Length: 231
Image (tube, rainbow, N blue to C red):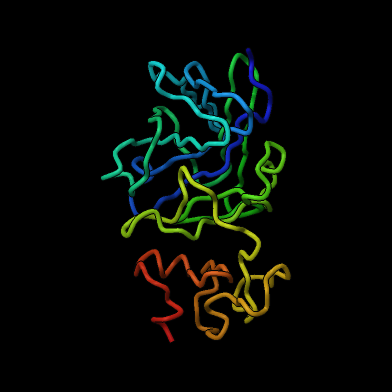
């Protein structure tokens, strides 16, 4: 039986892990929206520049209804940034520019995401791009505005991401009440400002999320909340 479009939805993409090299730490995650277990052997993974890999796991790559599944370039959690990978692929690399992830089976494209890296989709260095967990569908993930950068550390020395788990909320991304570099996001609760709102000297290229005080660029290096460590 051929799957329907949207039975599997791409929900997370790690393009630039930063804590480890791209060839060690790239991954992407899918979610099974159907009511059926979906075996993945024979499925085709493609990126946006026609790199192709056919899944061949010997029957071990299966995604259960309502569950996540992580594809990664490196299955060794000791060297990939602490990610538990369900299936290791080859011949696919994710560019920091225009690129994408395409999933198909039997000639049917079940889901695809074509990202632009910083234009409408997040420029998420050191963090994965995650789909808003309230918008998990094959249509919603086409829109860059429905994605944000993860704010959860994978491990103490890794990047930010939620591989194999629920994504972080996206509703308060890129808040910048002090106008130090990011446009104000009216969706953010004024009582939950981004962590550098009182500090105009914070680099304007820094990415903040107003609800948890994580400042990606500093936290990536210091592994701590810079709101508590940088005056």
